[in-house]
Amino acid sequence: MTAPSHQATHPRPVVPPIYQSATFFLNEQAYQDIQAGGLNEHWYGRFRNPTVDVVADAIATLEHAEAGLMTSSGMAAIATTLLTLLTAGDRVVSSRQVYGDTWDLLVRDLPRLGVDVVMVDVTDLQAWRAAIQQRPTAVVYTETLSNPQLEVADLPALAGLASAAGARLVVDNTFATPYVVNPLPLGADLVIHSATKFLNGHSDVIAGAVAGDRATVREVQRRVVTFGGCLDPHAAYLVWRGLQTFNLRLQRQCATARAVAAYLESRDDVVSVRYPGLPSYPGRSIVPRVIKHDRGGAMIAFAVAGGDSRALQVLRDLRLACEATSLGGVETLVSAPFNSSHFSLTREERRAARIDDGMIRLSCGLEDPDDLIADLRRALDNAATRTWA
Ligand SMILES: *Cc1c(COP(=O)(O)O)cnc(C)c1O
Image 1 (cartoon, protein in one colour):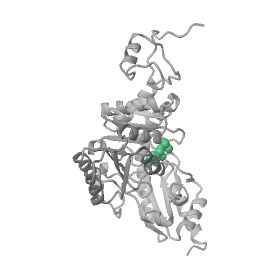
Image 2: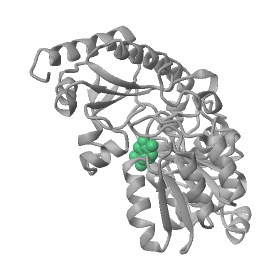
Image 3: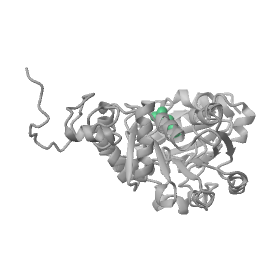
Image 4: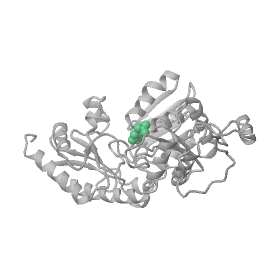
């Protein structure tokens, strides 16, 4: 049998093929590209893969970016980006309310490499300003909607502070998604995603993405090559497949979240509901400047009376919603930050980060909203008949 020729003509499929090939036929163009840095042609899968390119372009489009790239996970996207932008002696000013593994990267790993990291409360603009202006800053880092408190970062204000200081604003937009917030038009320099979450949307893949201006994305792509965190083409295909329903899913998930948040707020045994789409949301004044079309997102954080032990009773009693970490899937996912995403913090540290006792994080799926509310009602009522009061 002969090897397939790269010169054969192929039908043009509507669905991108999975180029499950680690290497591609070399030709004159490929040799020229190798000499020029190797990022323009397809000749080895860690540099570029056509299936991965399709997804990177789609995510760049969703984020109004010039260019995009894919990585093997959200953490690979974050680590590769930060290690591209930073060298020893540089300084990062970051939101304190970040994803747990991002916290570890910032607080434990980057300082080991000689990077100075300062954490500030995401809602405290005075603290951001003081920290950014105090010493030369290379990177300002935040999440659009924080995990799990769902604080909305004031992206236009942070972009102003960053650019005045000559720093790059890097934004993790995983929780909000491009359906709800587009950080780049608000002044961010780079936007990062855990594509594992809403972009893929089906809880069946681990993937990451970075989008921004062409030159910077190319710089990060060079480190995907050297650090090795490239995305597998089959995983890329699954993200592409998920993206086909991104808009529809988010439309429905945001509408369901609004209904669920309103229901939770109506209950006496729910002491707080954090959802950016509710009139009672504490950061309400920032919402119109950051969030598109008054959307609220698909994530809710709420705290039940009776604290963490009752939160656990409620979680264990849910039948439709799944007690699992992660978010953004078609199934509703619930977890208590105190024993999952934020288990390493002491009770005092959790309070300081506004993770209330009894807090539950809920990622709305595609179930019937009435069924979901009925599930929550039953679990909350059930837990009320026990001994929490
Ligand atoms: C899940 C998540 C990450 C990490 O993404 P992985 O794909 O799990 O590596 C980073 N940031 C946020 C906000 C996340 O939710």
